Length: 337
View 1 (cartoon, helix red, strand yellow):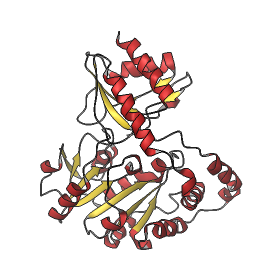
View 2 (cartoon, rainbow, N blue to C red):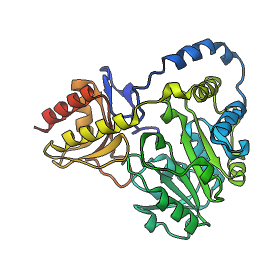
View 3 (cartoon, rainbow, N blue to C red):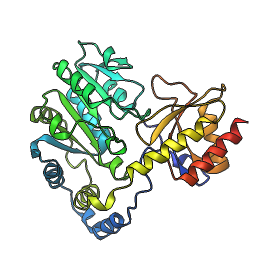
View 4 (cartoon, rainbow, N blue to C red):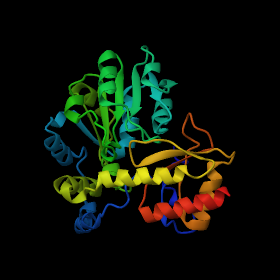
């Protein structure tokens, strides 16, 4: 999905003041990380570790798991493509609507796909199944109990559980230590999302040793650059300095959704995270609203038309500050009149 994703600020000449199109928490103070990376800039003259072993050891220590249960990747997206390569030619299922990279990665690796809207629709002949939990773009979660039940009742299906947004919900998720005990589960984790560093691209996979070995056969050396590795180690060692008030953020999301729901012709869908879907019910297209908001107010939203299962009336928002949210509400109201 080279085109049609969020955070496409580069497509607009007018400065974007409020970015609702990215579901990364962009209020995190990264000043200390920026200073640290400046102090390490000379390291770009040397090759990074080819498999990010130092970072891998820190992740293992933090989660009390084995080094051999981890593969560090250039963002969760590289992990998606590595997994698809590892299961080339198999049959797969994807819960939709969801992140389009699962489908894209499968298609170029000859994986025949079926799409489902719930776990109950997944067919037993499926060999791999992609589940985003919490899900992008809906922000909804499948309960831990239901996930475990599905895993245990389908031992012949390799389940790829993308938990990139687990840091933005109070709903309980499958822990890394729990997941690696299953022989049919691969978990994706995004430091990009957790620490709001999308420009650095940093993620990792956790799974039982057999599945990690299967994935690493396709791993490209030096895929994670020097500064990204340095950032990952620094963030893990100083994690307490890079936390935010999740409860307060979700409370603001709840208030934001209530206010949006009062706009006639706009449907707001429930969420378990800070981002959620909206639907225009007045016959208009979300791309027109997106263009209006960007040009008139310097506000960027995510047109959700390219998510399979959605149409051109859907868009996604990620909660910002109360002040910004109030401005967006007024801007949408002015467009809807």
